[in-house]
Image (cartoon, rainbow, N blue to C red; front, side, top):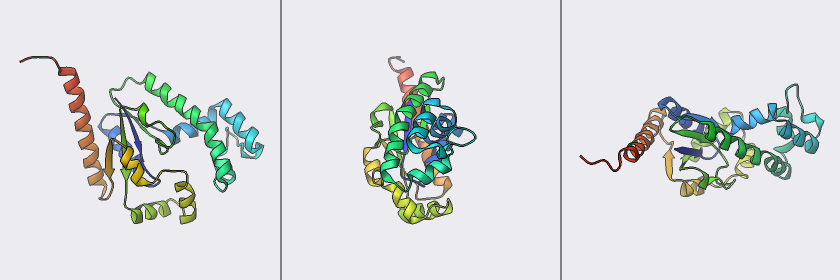
Length: 203
């Protein structure tokens, strides 16, 4: 079973995915894939340096901080970067799925629905969080309100992500409540897989 977890910035997506990993899922994130592409993928490094200049290159591939200074202040440039990276992330995610030996494969994709990938997975999960808490968590990461608005400008509203997802996780409690929801989803997944495996047998 393949599961994609999405949600707005600073909603607790990564924590929820990590909890599913602790329960036995194989887990990945689109951000980790992007970081790997920027370090190692010759096509990505070449296309990005050609478009944004050699100043975005570092000792090991693309310097993410230097690239961020160029694109995050300019929505058009950010869109160009995403046009370069999204197909590569798509292909790498599919490759990881194809090579996975795990019964449950989970990947965190912040722009899941925006990239048109919602139908590519067996199940989609949206993690949502109260707005005041999300701003507080964003600030703890050093992201001010202006930067947060820029990030949000690339994403569907939280309510729309929740509407499109198969499962909605409300991150409005503490870690224990989030873990409880991860365990509930895990039990549901195992129940489905058990019924698939046991279907057709008669007592």
